[in-house]
Length: 306
View 1 (tube, rainbow, N blue to C red):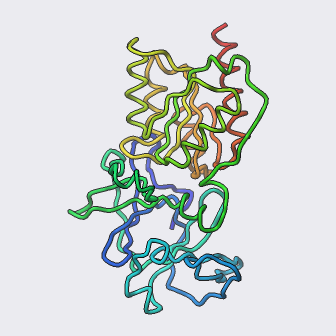
View 2 (view 1 turned 180 degrees about the horizontal axis):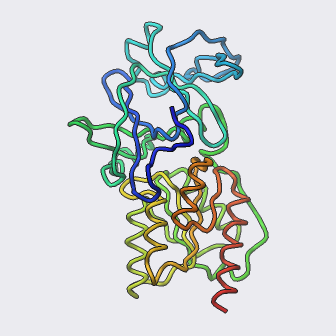
View 3 (view 1 turned 180 degrees about the vertical axis):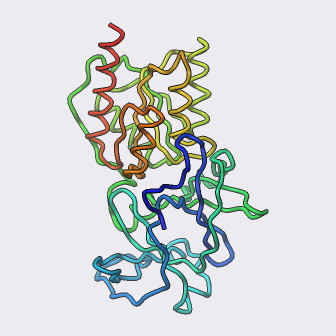
């Protein structure tokens, strides 16, 4: 389904395509950029010591993949998957490919990121793995945080990033960094990595719009200036590509380095990031590479402003 043509006709348009599926009667969504294909349910082989929400392994052409029963994981499995039916969404991100069993798959909707809102405080407080909420045709659609879900179930890196202690950048303690990511799990991991690497002055934002508002305040002299932006790509209200485009098209902000750190650093998204002016792009969960990218960008900016 997803291919090098990408989900966005142009980079920085703040658009995405959302595949809507259901667990029972509840509609959920996943970014099409994470979806490789959709298949009918297949037989699986049981895996010893696997979590209850892992159905087993199955073969898809030349690959053996793990099948996660998302309804069982959420304790909201519908009759389709309970009866041995259902559909499998093949997803790929963070260098991990697996199958997600759902009850039904509906259709793809093209949305602006500003049509996707942050989860309610209740969902956030309960640590429900949902990164956003969209109102589509009068239905509330929950955007599932597949990185956290798959990371927790399969134990793959990406949901919890490894601790990193790299060489401390020159004057890293003085660098004012703005961090934008919609996942509370990833934000906590990124903060730990940055603090371990000597970066102490960090402003945290939960989406691209909040980051842009902070950058405007800094530009207008209301708050301290920022030295670097570290941003996810997928975020409610404003995505990282659109945020980068706005920064690079602002005469007073364009010299601020932007590092995109995402599970969606595919060849297509690399081209998109380059086209909007991103200074570096790093794939999750490579914390070491992220720190090195930040150091290089800050060192380059120091030389240009010296």
